[in-house]
Image (cartoon, rainbow, N blue to C red; front, side, top):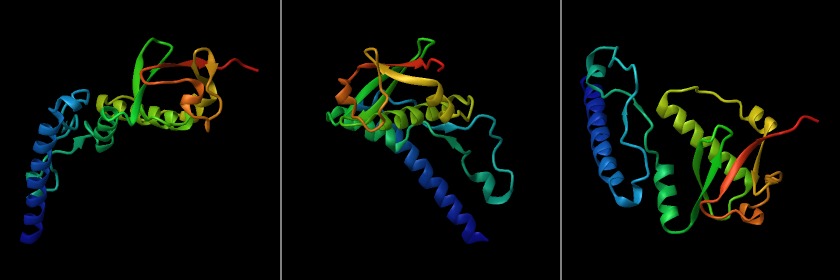
Length: 171
């Protein structure tokens, strides 16, 4: 039992060290576009199982992921590009994909972007992406991005270009 408490305390210390190192890393000018540091999940009331559990830090919502840090570094080295996806309500979402990404990879990156944003804001946790892709097209310069296997550059999409959601017409 005492060894178990030491392991949990050691885990808490490692977690604290990791969060401090991550905070320093995110202050780098290269990574300034990333969201703020990891914080406690909303509504968290602390450990409820008593004993060593009460000393553990509260669970955290994902604020900065390794994937996001990797994307920012890839952008800096020119290995990735930002595609701005515009919704019908005017909201623009910056989505990072590799330079030779396909339409399917853009869709997956968009899904991940939305999921992370929802987790951070505590909004709706589930969207039916099957419904979204059945109801909307992605378009660029008036052309539908219909072939998921086709590369974005084959459509002429470059860094910082805008892609829009357009509602499909009923047949």
